[in-house]
Image (cartoon, rainbow, N blue to C red; front, side, top):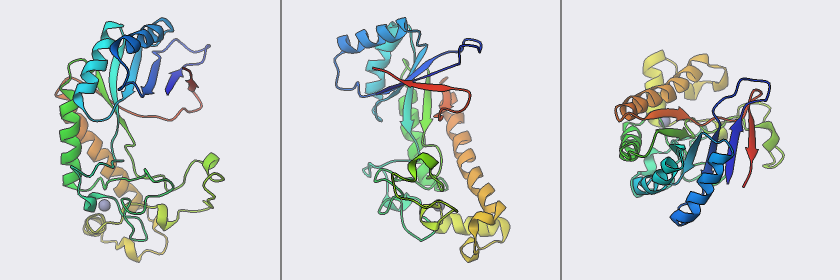
Length: 245
Ligand SMILES: [Zn+2]
């Protein structure tokens, strides 16, 4: 799959990036042909989602650089499912006390980690820094750098048969012991005793800050390797996403 983001024609020309995956099994010749085509189409750089093995980015990045393209590793951050390096106790807990590992929200792959665990930070730092060592890479593109959507995009309500008139505890994270205790210590508020946690502004801020702090710490480390750090975005009112082959 390949998604291109591009500006409107009446706006100044901006750099056009393509998000793509699924090339790991292709041979170099086939990948080169694709990248040459993208370059001719006016693509400036690629966000490539190829897993967590640095060798993959090295091989495919080399082809991208030869084609004159910028090359970024596009990698899910808080969503992780390979437990060979992750303990299942590091997963986020919803307002009903259920783990995102055993009972993910909406879809099976929504296995989000808790951003407040030092073990999670260490895992992510090690994973990203190994990839950031690849000289063919211009940057790391952080995907799923957030909590699960407490309110899912409206277009998906029907698909998953959801009533999303307010924030419901089964979609609200993270209520792990560490998040609850740290919040209590910081604000004096026992969030588990709150009738409507969504109305507690400090609780929202606390969780925004958990993600911001994690991003700041990760990007400081990645930038030491002279790589750019970006975050995955949704197409908004001022951008367009186009699918093409
Ligand atoms: Zn937590």
